[in-house]
Length: 64
Length: 115
Image (cartoon, each protein chain N blue to C red):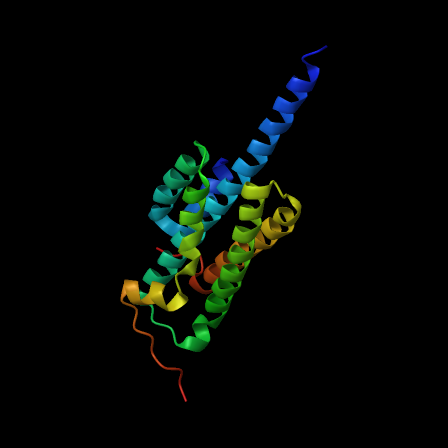
């Protein structure tokens, strides 16, 4: 991962980018089993609304 | 010279393993990146509530990503179980594009990025 890529991640995610970078480094530093890969891909089954609900987001209605 | 076929076989097998290994890492790292992006987006919305019409592009981009990830997962399983590389390249291109779409949609609204 280059310095430019790290800077881009930080500009998008803020300080939490460092946690993400650490996770990505761990992912790329070892061989993953099929089950481990599928555990990651399973995260994509989370719905958009579930992300919002977990964060406690209250969505205001569109103005009429 | 008599060891050449064995050597070639080892080379092919190792390159197959590397191809599959890298494919798995692409899936895993894409999943991690999008998960982090979506969590950041949700945190942004918590502080800056937006109506559904303003969230639509991010929501749509995420749904497109889910479709791409399902296809990429299927291609990866075919690669891992049968050594079938055919579907992976196309699926990985679509997956990478969908990840970029999500990040672009989020940063278009949040400006310099989510906190």
